[in-house]
Length: 258
Ligand SMILES: Cc1cc2nc3c(=O)[nH]c(=O)nc-3n(C[C@H](O)[C@H](O)[C@H](O)COP(=O)(O)O)c2cc1C
Image (cartoon, rainbow, N blue to C red):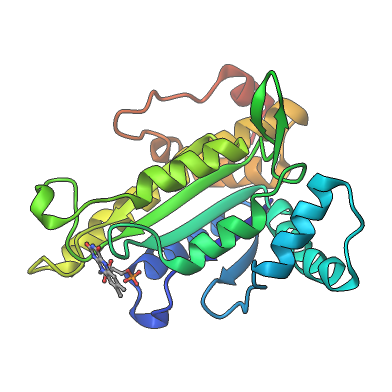
């Protein structure tokens, strides 16, 4: 499985959302074959989507030939999209900035959200996402905002924007991890611990879903089956609060006897 980790914080080792996202991807990779591609948006030197790139896009709409400059700009946008499209799963870590998403993430959204690439449109059906069959995990961080504060502590326009955008692209299997608040707290370590616990629970949920997906397609994944057989405690590991305990009979009968 290819996992694209999109890091929307420029704070490197000081970033709480990056730390939790790294924990999530590293732990997931311990349980499942995962190829991780990390995209640091603030270091990525993303191509501009200005006069030339918009010209290239409008040329397609108008059915006119792109100029040489427009062709080059459009190729650069396509390269960003191709990296996005290569992933089966996305992990975003996103700080709230001024009640919304950091500008580099909006830049990235404007690059990869293109008709015919990530979404389709028909005059009768309207929009349809083309990035289906993908999962996403979003690690949200904010200094002040969290779910228990009132309006005078700001807003979270980041979550609805990201959920709406992913849904627009057809990515509907979306999970949240929250590291909030990171500033308005006397104990940021406790805030982080809650996020790490949530990340561990999500790994169990996602790992189980991936395993079931695989088992639907192939008799069983030997590496995973061996892992489960070796680790009897994994059965306990599946018991997630508020989640039904599903080790389907199909899965069980397919395990080889020890
Ligand atoms: C430019 C900027 C704007 C911010 N705006 C908000 C905000 O509107 N609401 C909030 O709760 N925190 C805000 N913060 C605080 C960050 O969300 C907080 O420090 C968070 O931990 C950053 O995530 P990171 O640690 O992963 O970089 C802002 C921080 C920066 C640098």
